[in-house]
Length: 397
Image (cartoon, rainbow, N blue to C red; front, side, top):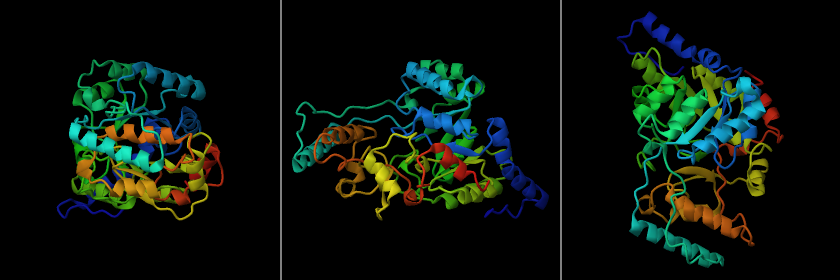
């Protein structure tokens, strides 16, 4: 472990704290009834109930992305019933339900009007037909941040369902929500991208922190959207810095630490477990499996990497996300200052409409985003079966 106790910490006390950190994995597996410290990342628009159930049945922890379900209790129940049908009643609670807890979008007519003009130009240059009725940007989904009462129907639905873990991306929900879930025996996990966000998670009393590095694919989980002072820590640096903070601050019972970002091999997983994290979370490795729903072009990028890098862009949805770079996505990103972009998730409305409108034309796929981690070119395992991918990932554990 690349961390040190303070000079004032007695040696035995210091070693005791190190030992407790090392015990995280053992306790994590026992608490959540798992065989392996593997969490399948919740990937909205790509991962499926079938993928989550496969990972859980093999001894890991499957995740169900519910970012757009914070006002849809019936939809949550339906997803859980589908999951139970695949894993069985005895394993139906062994799951991570993931929600978005971003700041509520502030509407700005000027910004939104300019953004619509930007897309009108894209349509014109691409020879696509613009829908003249598209005069405003739609808010595609709400945020869990808007829920401030434990009596909210969605919160009560989760309390009734009692999944092992409910996790949140982009921030920490209201303290009454966190308390209600924990009182029901549900563990609350939060994504954090640096030590300062970890501190906020610890102070909020959450049960686990997903340490999402700059290498991770999909949406960056910063509490502050598109932070110009983002530390951009890689996975190893992020894990080491948080472990050091825990040791130096003499935190004897830290939340579970989950390493996430750019992890694609059993050797990497073992390295992070040896450092003292409770588990790892992986996303991109599952994308080429038949248990995920990605486009043929997306699959081709991962199976046959041609040297394309990845791009962190706030222009697609209004929040930074990592995607495989294409000429269009590069231009979309470089031609907009962060201050010009409407609040998340408003820009997603324009982007998704463009992708849909291009589908039936010769430009199908040209405007799409291909969310993936920075190591996507090392993620193809030569198999499209999630079970085989899982076996490869645990081969050295």
